Length: 158
Image (cartoon, rainbow, N blue to C red; front, top):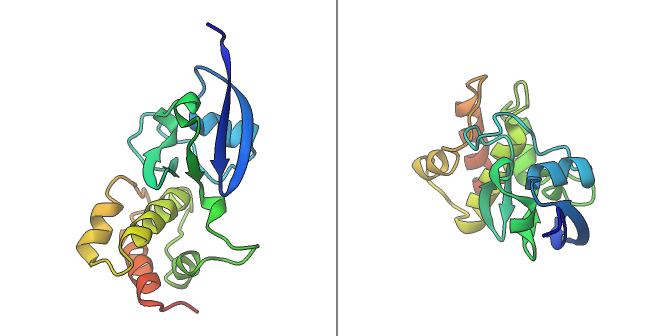
């Protein structure tokens, strides 16, 4: 068996044909091969959520997902939320509510929140908290983050 495999993924709407090492994680490939550094490396154990991306519409921890597992998948990263350089309503709501503090957890929080809003455009506070439960914020900005998601759902952005 070769240590390198060819995979095809669609990342933020763009098809990519890649050669990946069989032991590389999706996080490695996103950051190192594709230059998508918005997805953060933190715990490397799937515990903190800083590396959260979507794969076929479901949130996953890219630090514990092998890149070869993504072959044929659609991947969404935080870079895919903006539209031609304009912030998405969710990203704007995060700014409006001062959700980013140090900012390290925010990409994963945004991806998880957008996945929730894609499934449920009008979530309750409890649904937001549950959807973001796998994303840790060491600055403890949870209130601002949940407020931002609820504001985006309500269309309350500047």
